[in-house]
Amino acid sequence: MKRMKSGLSNNALTRSATFASLSVAVTLVVAKVWAWMATSSVSVLSSLVDSALDVLASAITFFAVWYALAPADGEHRFGHGKAEGLAAFVQSLIIAGSGVFVCYEALQRFIHPRPPQEISVGVIVMLASVLLTLALLTYQRFVVRQTGSVAIAADAMHYKTDLAVNLGVAVALPVSAYTNLPIIDPLVGIIIAGYILWGTWGIARKSLAILLDHEIGDKHRFKIREIAEQHPAVRGFHDLRTRSSGSIFFIQFHLELDPKLSLLGTHKILDSVEEKIQAAYPNCEIIIHPDPDGLEEERDSFDVI
Image (cartoon, rainbow, N blue to C red; front, top):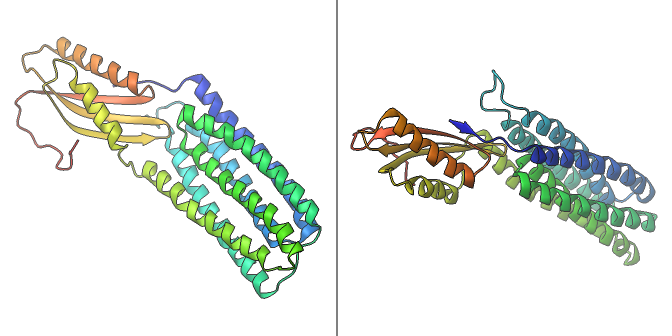
């Protein structure tokens, strides 16, 4: 078995993204508390709740990523990567809770309408929030491309909803005030809440895939098999099993080889195949089981790759 650990630069990128996320979340909460107190707007409140929960979610991500990047130890031989999946799942629950709360507040404002106040304060804060969120999302997108971190991707989903919230509120406040239609404010709040709840499912699905050892994508599985079968000494390939833990792929499979090969010869072939797979997937652990060609044995009934 070989393992290629993620480079120090990737670890530093992931950690810096969590710190940036937490810093932005705290800044947005402070600004939106001021805006909500000035405007009494339910749409501003929805944005404030979203940002307040972002602080909690970003804090969870911050500590989860630091734990997930810790090297394997005697009690965690496969590393700590699943902490990212757990953090992402907790975030999905937090996002869902914020969506339900905003829905409730918006429905209350439908029943008891009240026009927002100090529109200019709310608009300025929302537009500033948009710019700050865009800057953070740009950096998070770069980090996810470089590291494949599911926790940072989930955190970015938070801020995508935050971006939509801020834009919606920035439009709703002046429209609600100048058209004398206070119903627009809670209506925007409900639309935002629906968008938040819709985004929750994608985060939960990806995090559960990690926590429940879901197979990696078929395109990767086909590629792994193709690489292995390119070796001229490989006569067969079966029982491929894969999973991911954080940004690490765990790969294991059987190779059918000439039964007359020596142990040293078999070892050299396995090393060659491992090196080629790791060239394509640098951040992975590989276990290869050699089988003598022609041996009749039970195989996975669901092995269709």
